[in-house]
Every structure is written in C-alpha cells, then in structure tokens.
Amino acid sequence: HGFAAFVLAGLMGLQPVTTDLMLPALPALAADLQAPMASVQLTMSALILAFGLAQLVWGPVADRYGRRPVLLAGLALYVLASAGAAMATSVAAVVVGRALQGAAMSAAVVCARAMVRDLYEPHEGAMVMARALTGLGAVAIASPLLAGVLVAGFGWRAAVAAMGVVGAVMGTFIALRVPETSRHRRPEATHIGPLLRQMGATLAHPGFRAWSALVMASYGGLFIFLAGSGFVLIGVLKLSPAVAGMVMSTCSMAYIAGTLLCRRWIPRFGLAGAVRRGGWITLAACVSLLALAVQPQPGVLAVMAPVWLYALGHGVHMPCGQAGAVGPFPKSAGLASALAGFVTAATAFGIGLWLGRSLDGTVRPFALAMGTAAGATVLVAWTLVRRHGDQLKPA
Image (cartoon, rainbow, N blue to C red; front, side, top):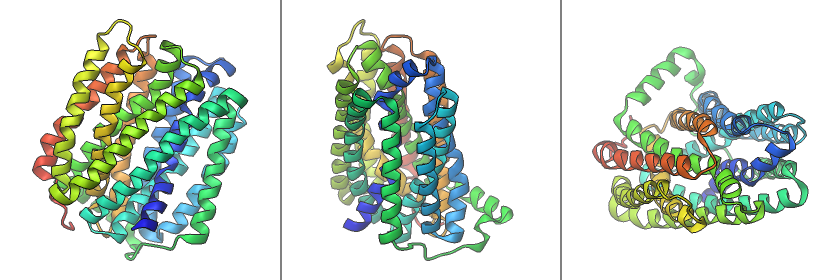
C-alpha cells in the first residue's frame, strides 16, 4: 500500500503542481504581458478544459494499451508544454502552453485513478486514495510557497519552468520503477461502438452518477479558490506574492487533516457514511462563506477561516468520490475515471470563465461562489450519495 500510495501521490500531485505553482504568478504574469483579467483567467480555464477533454481520449487508450505507455507519453508532452509556456511572449501563447499542460497532466491523473481500481477493491482503494491524497496535500502546501519565492526572485516564468522539472523527474521515476498494473487489456476499448456502449452503461450507473456529482461539486469550490485566491489575497487584501503563497498553502494543511479524518471514518462508516459526516463540515463552510460575502472589509483570517473549513470537508469527499466513481468498473476503470474527470473539469472551466468576468475588486464574488459550491456538495452528499453511494459492485 505504501509504494502504491507514494506513486499515486506523485501522479495526482502533478495537478496541484500545475495549478498551485501558478497562483502567486498570475498577477505578475498580468503585469509583465500587460494582459486583462479575463485573458489571465483563461490561463487557468484553458488548462482545466483541456484537462477534462483529453481524459476522454487517454481513458479508453489506457484501457486498451495499459497505463505505462499513456503515463510516459503524457509526462513527455507535459515537459514540452511547460517549456513552451515558460518562454511565451504573449498571453495567448501562455494559454496554448497551459492547455497542452492540461491535456498532458490528464494522462497522469486518469491512469492514477485507474491504477487504484486495477489493484484494489473500492473500500480498500478509497483508503489508499486517502493516503495518496494526504501526500498530494503536502505537494499542494509546498507549491504556492515555492511559487511565491520563485516569482519574487525570478518572475512568473520561473514558476512555470519549475513545473517542467517536476514532470521530468516524475517521468524518469515511472520509466525506471513503476510496473504495468492493468490486468484486463480491452482491444475494443477504443472502437467507437463498444466505447459508446460502455460510456452509456457507465453514465447510467446510479453509483457512478452519485460519486461523480460529489467530486464535481466539491472540486468546483476548490477551483474557485485556485482561480480566485491570488487576486483576492494580492489584489484585494494587498499581500505580497510570497506572503500570499504562504497563506494559500494553509488551505492544503486543512485538506490533509480532512484526508486523515477520511482514513479514520471509512473503516467505521463506509464510503457513504464518511461523506455524510463530512457534509456537516462542508455545511459549516457554506454558512461561513455566505456570511463572509456580506462583510464590507474582511481581513485575511475572515477570508481564510471558511476556506479552511471547506478544504477540511474536501479532504473527506475527494478520496471517497474518486474511488467510488471507478468502483463498479474493474474492466473499464480508465473510461470511468475519464468520464468522472471530464464532468469535473468542464464544471471548473465554466466557473473559471464566470470568475474572470465577476471578480470586482472585492471578496464578495469569490465568497458567494465558494458558498454555493459548498451548498451543492452537501446536497449531493445527503441525497444522491446517501441513496446510491453503496452501489459499488462490478457493473
């Protein structure tokens, strides 16, 4: 379990590296390339849209050819895309580089979730996923801290270049140390007829729909934090990039605490029971975020305390949701992982576009949007997951 959790943390950690290293860099990028707010937000939105769409390609390919070839191809593309974005001379070129990063990063995340299902049954897989996401939380703490230092010392390009270095290290490790985990190669996985039939069966499964909706709602709120926190902390509250990076990293500490809670609750209450309890934490976050939205001039603590509550709940919902979504599909875990990832990323893309137009120099849009996501997460946890979350037998 330990080695599997370590590999998963590395692969899934590519996502916070790619998003969180950019957080303190966004205002510097805007100033350097003289780009408007909506264009700069597009560097996050394009990343997440490409991340979602590419999963629909990588998932079936990984079911047909195995996880290793897809991982190695994805990580090689990631290194090239990072280099391109770091050398870009216009915001449009940064957006293209970030979109390619997103497409490449999705190979790592799809394969990581599918590998959990290759190796473990759903409840055991959720425990391993929770351990991996504890490690991912540590990556997410380090990323904005490192970015704050890099941006302050060398500018925004250094933060993007650092992503390429991480991708190269990860690709080398996979090539040397990680074996193939897929035991069910499906030659028909990429054939259009069987692919559409399997897609239909996956989307029709009530358990898949319940867990995917939970991941979509919970990650939607986290993405609001990822896309908006740099502008709130640096633009509204006037923190320096380095201090803002330190403040952002505290969100990941709360997330780690949530994954540790999750690991305690799953053996006692099961996946759906753990999520039901996590719902109370997310409800508290919802109420405090909506209260934050009506404060005229909140300080850093007033902004971050509700975010910490949200991240604590997210640490419970995410391991359960990701393991639950692929649980019923041992022979097509790549596709199930890809579909769950796609709907989540499509939601985040929509949020990113909205946020780029809505940030108005106050905390209000940020707080209202996160509060709404928290409310949606609780609703899914206490209705769909409660009703269908235990339907994890192979479909």
